[in-house]
Image (tube, rainbow, N blue to C red; front, side, top):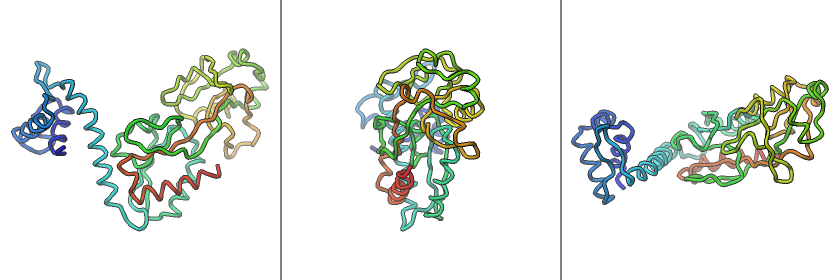
Length: 294
């Protein structure tokens, strides 16, 4: 497939007109039409049609647009990365992380990367759906998930964390310690919202789920931890055993640890187009070694 033809087609789709797409690409409208027509000739079916509302996609065009965007993102990501191939990882590592990871987890990881690869800088972004980010903006995506992600990703389980309930001792003294799932329903509950999960369905250790009505639902794990530290309620989060700096070790305690919870894998996923780039392979290996003791 000719990338210039595909780029012309996708720009028409994004802008909604041949004129706007031609201006965006800096070519004449005639040249743009010729590229789109050549792509339709290769496909053997119409991809676009004109209506009173403007240019719209045919069914075949919708399919090509969906896959074509991924192809262009993969191409951009690959070209950007091969410019940085060398003996030592250098340039920018574009890292996407789940929203709300505790900062004291990320700080030593960043320090380790800088110590080992001083020519490497990190562009870290937080996302409530790391795998939903454009591929041309991602080198590594860290996320929670049992299943291998769909699409053009290669995925590795970096570690497993315990998901469970926590609360402060002060809150439990004030409101009472729940001894059963029924008693839990009378408390202030905070629920972590994982991508693709129902935050109102909480897991039991036996693999079942039960329904709750949380006072707070958020993708921000750190927000739930700080609310629990403040004595506001009981929170369901991953990394339940994680200690918080500058707080007493026994400030937060597990709640119903023999009834509620599960293990969740933490995955590191790499766009397939980048998986053999030396910089990505070396950094990925280093991150996995760093996380292994945890």
